[in-house]
Image: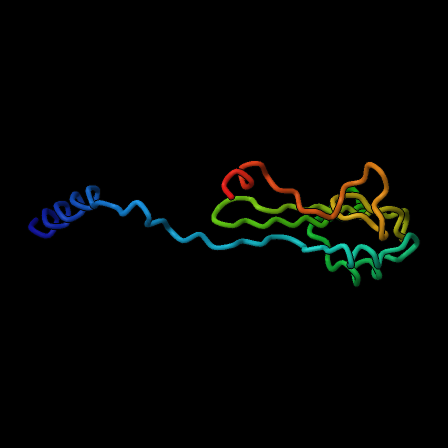
Length: 130
């Protein structure tokens, strides 16, 4: 009985502990997915086999069992709990050979008109906090 009363009184006092305004919990940097660079994509050429693409880019993060002709490479970087960078590259095969590349990182040295660039996609909330 005494132990229960003592624990109850101690826990009741924890709710009113003053916090310092500058004291925040530490949030670690979280990287998820496949980090695909422009150099890695530049190595890809139409007609390459699946094993050659896997050697150049690594194992894809997402392989849809119903659409085996498409591999998705997704990358996200979270800092302090906010999404800072997000990239997506999709590799499409025709049969067993590479047909085309879609997404944030473009194949070749110069980006075609209207294609997305290799620059990371930054959410507006992350830009405002800088």
